[in-house]
Length: 133
Image 1 (cartoon, one colour):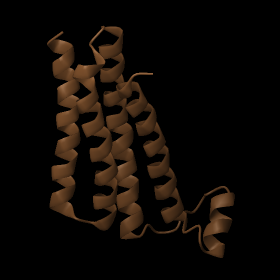
Image 2 (cartoon, one colour):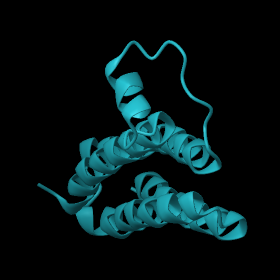
Image 3 (cartoon, one colour):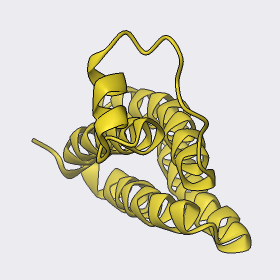
């Protein structure tokens, strides 16, 4: 398997971790009431804490970006773009998303935007490799 396809798989795993973290924080799974809510029908969710709300937004943003990342990598692979031209962009995207999640949960606003931009540069590198052939 090529490195960029591994980063797609890693990103899918990261997305799952982000979604689960957001859900666990929202439900407060470490409490008896949270556990009851999590195993129930989830009809009346508890109020989100600021961290839970940030985790939810970060997970939603990751889902949106995962679609773009996956599409770009698949187009590049199907189009015959050499892995060497894709690997750095894929790595930048993935590691920026790991840092993005941590920074977003910590509530560091400006750093979050900078790290998000690094991931966007990674996507741009993949797109440029496609356009550049």
